[in-house]
Image (cartoon, rainbow, N blue to C red):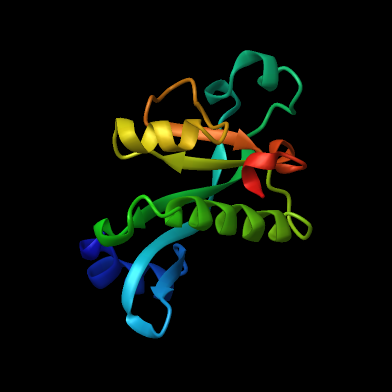
Length: 146
């Protein structure tokens, strides 16, 4: 968590590679509780499950990527990860009113992260066990995101 936020995040923002959103400790803006990064990418149709791919046009599908989502060890277990994920989803839904975004994509760093995303409905892309996705239409009235 520390390495990215201290060494790489600023460079990614300056280069317009990603945007980074930070949750700070109330009353202490120097203590980071967690953060996530957002950027865009295209999903090749062959990466999607066949039942979805059949319904889509034959070109890469636009998506939002949560490239990094991390929570400080000192506040793990308090729902900060869920809060950050919901914030990322809300930002993406807002942007999707202006530009087309079919899905959210995440890169799970390990099995714990994969399990975290799967509990919110994310599923593996066909070509990778670490990259998961969820169609934006899944966010509609899903109580997991409220």
